[in-house]
Length: 195
Image (cartoon, rainbow, N blue to C red; front, side, top):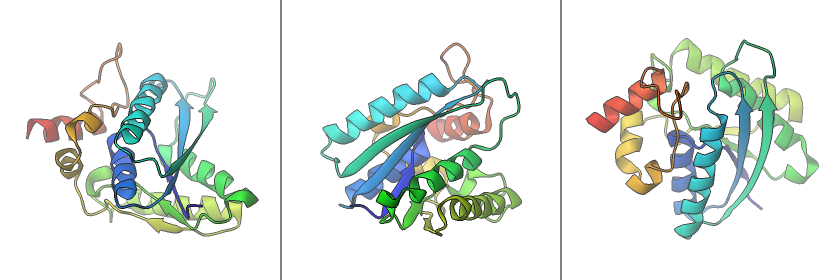
C-alpha cells in the first residue's frame, strides 16, 4: 500500500508530479475530482485525465491506485480557489480507516503558481488551508510534499515528454472547446511554449 496521495486535475503540474513519482519507482494513490462550476472546464479535464492515465499505463507506469469523485457547485456562482476543494477531498480520503497508511500529500505547486512565488500571501494561505482542512476532517496531519516548488511552469513544460504534455488540459475558462489564452494559467503555458 502506498503512503502518498496526489490529487490530479489532468493539468500539467499534477500530471508532471505523477509522472516523476512513478518514474522513480514509487507507488502512488491518485484521485481526480470532477469539478463542475460555471467555468466549464470539467469535461476537458475529464478527457485529459483519461489520456494521462492511458499514457502512464502505456509507458509501464502502473504503480498507482486511481479513484475519483465529483464536486458540483450547482447554482452557487462564487468559486473558491481549487485548493479549498482539494484539501477537503484529501481530508475525506485520509479520514477513511482503510487509508491510514497515507502519510504524505503531494502538492503540485510550481514556483510561479501564485503571483509572487511560494512566499506570497496566496501561497502561504494555500499551505495553511491544506494543513488545517485535512487535520480538521481526518484528525491527522500529513507531510505536505512540494516536489516542484523550485521549478517554473516553463521548466515543467520543457522537461515533460511532448506526447504527455499533449494529454493535459490547463485553461481555466475554455471557449468553445479551446483555450482562452487569457487566464493566468494560459498565459504561463503560452509564454513557455513560445519560449
